[in-house]
Each structure stands twice: as C-alpha cells, then as structure tokens.
Length: 340
Image (tube, rainbow, N blue to C red; front, side, top):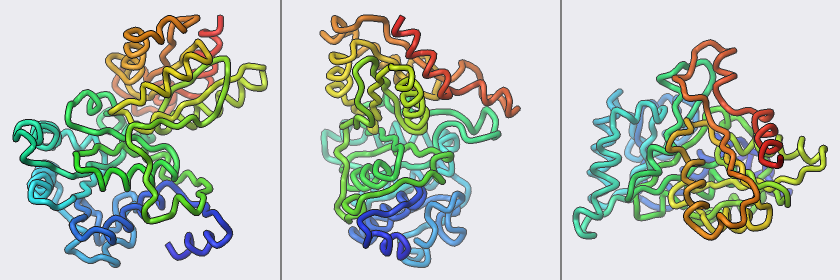
C-alpha cells in the first residue's frame, strides 16, 4: 500500500487486480469494525493467492480468521454472524469448493430476508476465484456466473480490472444484501493504471450498472470478467478491418443492466455475447431473452450470436483446454458472422 500511495502523487497508480482487491478489503475492514475476512489460509499464510497479504499482520486474528478446510462450516458460521449484524467477507479458495457450502449461500443467506418478512438480513460477501485458470482440470475450472445469477436474493458481481475490483468490492461490503463476488485467477496478475479517485476510501461503483469500455457503431459485444480482455483485443483487430465494435463490461450479473445493453443495440443493431461458461442457460442466453422480450428485438438486423465455453467438462491437457474457452479469434469470427 505504501508503494501504491507513493505513485499516487503523480495522479495515478499502476497496480494489479490482486492489489486492488487487497486494498479494498483493507479499507473496508479499517472503516467498519463489523467487517472481517474469513477463509482457508487467509491469515498467517497471507492467502492461497496472496490476495489477503499483510492483512493478518495489520488487523490481527480477530478480524482475519483462518479456518479449517470446511467450507460448509465457516460459511454457515459467517451467515450466522451476518444475522447478528457482523459483515463477513467469506473467501473461497475457488468457487468450485463453494459447492460444499452452496446450501448456506442459497437456502440460508439468499432467502433469509424474504422468509423472515424482512426481519433478518445478511450483509455478507462471498468472494473467490471463478472460471478456468490453467491446467487444473474439470473440477476446478467451472464458471458459476449463471448458477448464482439465477437465485433471487443474491447480488452477483464479476470485476474485470482494478477499477471494477475496488469499486465493486467496496460497494458489495457496504450493501445490506448477500453478494457473490466472482474473481478470476488469471486476472490477479494483470496490472492497470488507476486514477487517484479510484483509490479514495469511499470510491464505489453503482451495483447494477455496466460500463461501455469502447464505443462503436457496427456491433455490440457484451461480456464480463476475463472475457473483457479478449473482447477488447478482438475489437482492436476488427477496427483495422474497418469494423467498429462497442464493448460492454457488464460488471454486475444480477441485476443485469438492461438499459445499457438495449441502448447500445439500438445504435449498432447487432449483438455478440461472450462468456467462458457453458452456453445452456448462460448469461448470453439471458441477454437474448431480454432482447426478445422487449422492443429491443425490433432493432436487430441479425440474430444474436453467443460465444461460450465448449459444452464439456474442462480437459486437463493444455492443448484441449485451450480449445475449450473463447479466445480473441472466436470473437472476431462471431462478429463477422453477425455482420453477414
């Protein structure tokens, strides 16, 4: 944090997504005595992916809780703590492991406010890595974006860059509802320039608001998380061929920002959705339904094209894994298809 603060004297900092998440948690733990971080290896080991590095030394064991390897145990404990007014940040080493605790996330936390007629709330953040990393095989490579975004009572966020990571995580911690915060392991080491205002202790990104990363007039590309990177690369490549793409970073997956999607469609008249999760019942499928069920449908000049992960368990073999998830060339091909 000292290194980052020093760079801010020049008006901006260059930091990694890992550092952005770390600094956001530190500020929220310092700001609110009810906030604490809990999970496996988050404390003395500094985090399995070093996202919580330095927090145990700074805040101590009463605010940074190391747990045994029992997702069901520490998630249930955290939901109970949230019922009593505390604000846990629950770290799953990976959301694949959160499947051991999904009953607490959905049946306890997400439904509690409704089933208690508003008498009980759980201000709680469930965060950790989501989607494919590299060579960790089928049981550690799933995207849970569509899974959780189907559940009433949950807010689902998926950051791309440092701006997203800081602004969305801080907004999640301050929100009175349960929030699923889907990070990406590959993005942890990605570095971005961060304006000084993003480092402010009260910098928040509104939940439910997408961001237009790049304006265009021919095709709208709607995406989130790591796929924003590939979509931006595809847009740059297509620009050299005279094709202008608008790229939307959803940021929030539930509730979806319908207005930004529809407004862009009304301008470009063509849509490509990109996600690394499976296609069936995915985020792209929901966007297709939104378009079909509104007047936006009449602005389409071509059917929506979806770019998704392949409908198979993720292979361990590197060459097959590479073929299982969208890359820049897949997005380029989809854009050209929708323009035919």
